[in-house]
Image 1: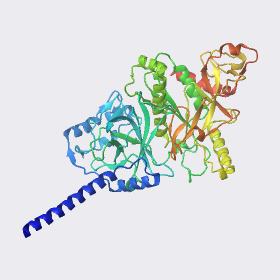
Image 2: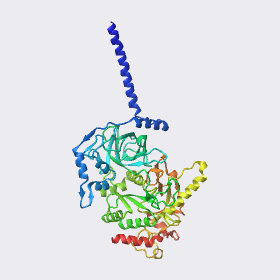
Image 3: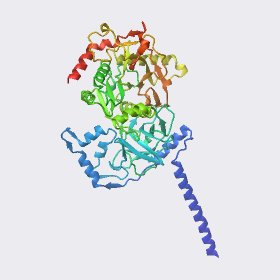
Image 4: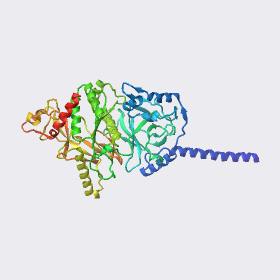
Length: 544
């Protein structure tokens, strides 16, 4: 009887122990899932705690295939005078080639995906699955995030209108476990309504835990649960500090946070698909006008283009004025040039959504090189009516914006996220008199199309393009900001530039009968100030 009582007591105690263990297990599991309704300050506190305790066990494995891969990456391609890794870095700008090359003796953490464990899609995209949601990742960038926590931002697309919050594996070393941190923000990168009938662009943000906040990861993977094997591995681009290329002086000022005169602007262009027409001469003229105006560099994405345009782009890439990235659209969008051209004409909603991927990628990729980056297409040229060059124009914008902010400080006005230049149309079917374009050869387009309407059409809200301040902007669509360092933002955060100071010439309309009436058009001579410089430069390029 006594023995039975002891057994009964032991069983009761064991039951309590089991219940305690299960409760702890439940608490541990639920502590890693932050409800979306948690208030932001409390949410951030929870995330910090999770990051401080979350870690993975890393099993070092030795694979002959990894060693063989590294050896192959060092092989020289004699006809290009490049190693295989250098060639890959050019064609796969989002693949951490150097990081993978650092694998020594084939030994690496078992959680680090090899080149062939990555699920490649359409050449450049990488597939991950969060729960039952497919996400295609394109690129990732380190963001020093002024005023906030340093983070890594991943750019991707999905058909899900509410992508689940996954986890980032932040890689600093191939033989050490990744630092694990959860996605805290998933920002939709489009002005169009969400719809699962097409791939939608998103920006995923993973903050760096406090232990590694002073470091920059080499690579990142996105997974559904912490410490599970990954099928993605993206190079983390960017830098902790802005390069000297941003400054006209060529060196970093003593205190870059204060007002600095002499900023160098850059331009992000579109993904070029001039395959069915020879756009090479107009491209050269466009680039040389931008150079004459003081643009520091032009960044272009390239799909399939005409052979003559390909030669021109190669010239400017070797010259250093243009940086090129080969681009492929994600599935289900086809990358055959003739069908893709039809797709851009017919599937406008899908095309506009996909534009936001490379527009945002370009800004994030180069925000450490330039503070001010504009998005212009090859049929758009800035007219800086009151300034000698773009750097002087920027000096004016910054100074006048700060003066305006000081006047409105009581209203708690923030500095603008960028500056919008209104469109003014120049018409393809209007030719100026010969006296207005003296000595300009017939095959020049922008220098010869100088006629615009005296009374232009009513300008709607979308008829402008933006010069972005990359101290603030992080995600955009074709005409304005969507995501900033402080959270979501919109075109309301932009400052409009008066058209008597500057505007954006748009060379793509036909005026027709409206412009046949007397005194309906006027000659705009601004670009003629660059005539001699541009003509000489264009002829030099075309002769080369």
